[in-house]
Amino acid sequence: MLEFRKGDLYIENVKLSDVAKEYGTSTYVYSKQQIVNNFENYKKAMTLRDGLICFACKTNSSGAILKILADIGAGADTTSGGEIYRCLKAGFNPSKIVYAGVGKTVEEIEYALKNKIFMFNVESFEELDAIDKIAANLKIKANIAFRVNPYVNPDTHSYIVTGKKGTKFGISYEDAVKAYLTAKRKKNINIVGIHFHIGSQILEIESFVVAAKKIKKIVDEVEKNGIRISYIDCGGGLGIKYEKGEKVPSPKCLISEIFSVFDKDKKFIFEPGRSIIGNAGHLLAKVLYRKMSGGKNFFITDAGMNDLIRPTLYNAYHEIIPVKKINANVKKVRSDVVGPVCESGDFVGRNRILPIVKQGEYLLITCAGAYGAAMSSEYNSRPLLAEVLIDDKQTKLIRKRANYKDLILNEVL
Image 1: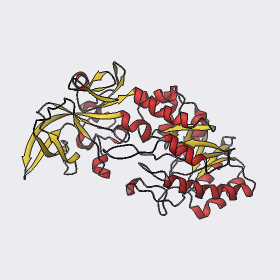
Image 2: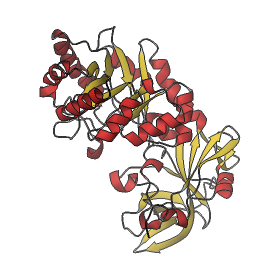
Image 3: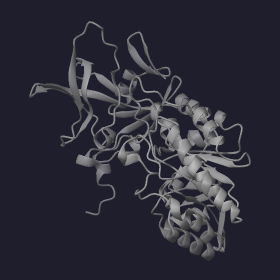
Image 4: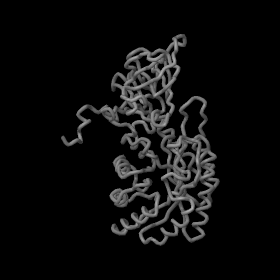
């Protein structure tokens, strides 16, 4: 949805320089149409089987964005009681909410059960005991799947690999059948599925298929013991294109390959996050100052690591584009694009070949919709930034820019 028209960068039919002038910077900007298109790609790929497309709301938990997805029929993949609360407020049907996470508290489990969510993805034997006990106290049965670690190590950043041996996630592969036999004996547990998730920003299908085949072996063994597995929850993890030249498999390709592994009577849950919101959101920033230090050029912007921590945390790459098209003859320089935070690790891009942008002009840090605003903080006492949704020619403020008073709102002085 990004396009230059007569020298100005647009999202849908809105000029980004106009967004900067109206709402200030730095600001997250989202395309509603891109969100809808990305979800529809998954929905179309699921037509041959029953199941759910559950948006991984940890990637972006903005209420307005959640509401868009709820309104077009998405389910929700949640990882905390707070995410369940947000999803219910946004209008998600509780019967389409799945709850994952290795550290669910008693209060969170109780909250989820009282709100009649569809299923817990259970990650330990002790968690199973806790859910059974809380469900007994509430005189209800809890739907569960076990998250099984298939011991697959995809080609992605080590911090976002979740399915290899030695991570904190899931039941170990060796203990999977035992876990199901244990759950079968619990009076307040209803076994409905199995779950696996191997990581994030994965750009090849093979790792998903290898994991699915290993999970199929567990399903076969469990069902030999008289336990019916109705849902195969395949998690998320499909990557997006951050850099030129990267090739990304389509949801259709991923889902069709997974379908081929399992029996035709199985229902499926997929939990995409980044591949729905990642390329639909961008960070709009202003160049505050320019300088050369130690033989290196710097563009200092008003977007810091507290606004977008992915480059610092994962050494992640985001393309950076001036919102005014620069004449091809303008000199380009190798520069670091950095923020105002008092850390040497505060950068959004290093060693980028960029035209010499004037002080006060705007840059767009692209594909920041996933894990951008969701991971932002008030570090250096910098108020949280604004978020704007673009819908064709219309703009809507979906999160107000915080101010200094907001920084101490919950403090007891």
